Image (cartoon, rainbow, N blue to C red; front, side, top):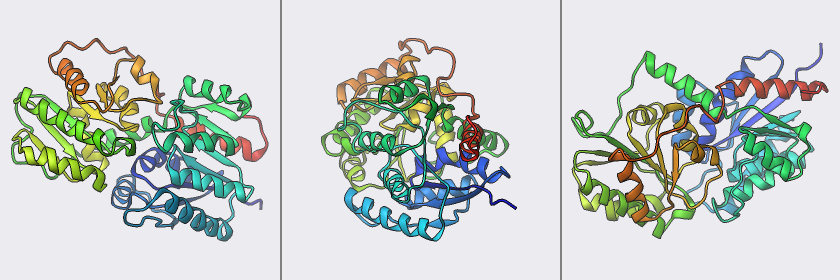
Length: 379
């Protein structure tokens, strides 16, 4: 009896886990593969919460996280740990997702083992290696290492073609975040969840909800200070609104949040501990607008029909900007306040219909392409 193709799926941050969860489920339900799930574990608490949400038990946990880790240290630990993993459990194909340092390190390790790499969510570009940093460099480098490129949109496919990737290696599949959203929203419809940490009676009422997220490295320092000042300004301008900010665990985020927002003591601002995916989606569904520097939030917004004020200077997701769901303002106090005020006052332009990120079947398309490649059949 022929041995099934061995596919190792690697991820380790909360966003990676969300986007890879449908892929894991698709491969584990597919009798054509022998999948192995490996987590790197650099978002320990937040990763574990997502794994529990999607009922995923990893086959191996590299647990590369250390306190106040450097990017060089994270890269070195991931290379070493994943090298040991591939020596003990060789793979015919390694799947990585996105643009994290661990994804790049895992892809590089697979390359050292002469194992083909499949890059989920390939082709995103800002054209600026400093923004987002280090993600832009990670995904550009992964493009050079990968054999299979799973592009989420036509624009990302075109980026890959422009980079010289052969057309036969590029597969337009949609974004797996839409798959994950469909799974999570169906679960919430069956069993709604409560959001922990909210003050009693905070959300009920007629005022709009403004959801805030922030964690980008390039915003550390003055950028986060500007974001916090902008939220404080908006809380004063819109006293009937409710502002909810699940604060990332990174001390570079918690520092300015505590010094500026917590010190302001606005009654209509709730600062929470990081939320699970279902709890976060519960707020996202209710929000009038999301203030964020996140990548995934930009992709989730069209499915949910929500507006995002993007507190970054660049975006690798122009499709959401073109549809009106995302407005790019940078980490600039006055621009954040102006854009959010326009949305809360009802003067923002209308959203375009449709979802540029696909129909929620990306994971099964990825599995089909991988099987065709491993079988030597053109996809």
